[in-house]
Amino acid sequence: QVQPVESGGGSVQAGGSLRLSCVGSARTFSNTAMGWFRQAPGREREFVAHISQSGGSNYADSVKGRFTISRDNAKNTVYLQMNSLKPEDTGVYYCRAQSAYVVWGQGTQVTVSS
Image 1 (tube, rainbow, N blue to C red):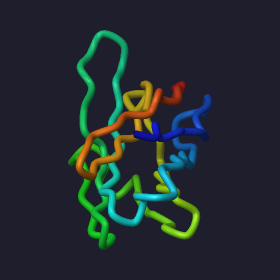
Image 2: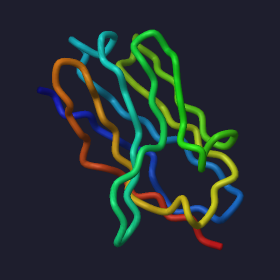
Image 3: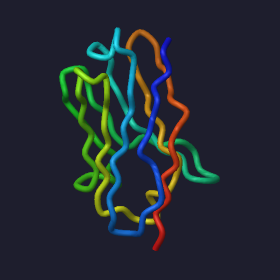
């Protein structure tokens, strides 16, 4: 299975924005549900957002209204637009591809300072 590759993380002040990208397998992307998860230091990995093969999405309550997940099947890419960032959004953000298998990316660090 092809491992998804995340990019776009970085450091930003509270109230700022970042856009994460995740490139998946060209062969299977359109048939793959994609999700974003995050893990803060000392905490378990938690769900952030999900987008189905048909484009339906859902979000964790903590990010609703601030984050937007989208996908571009022509580019084999899923995005996470993060606005109004808060210090509690800090963590490693992981992309997950789910078809017949679940495959995780290696993660990208997001740091939000107050």
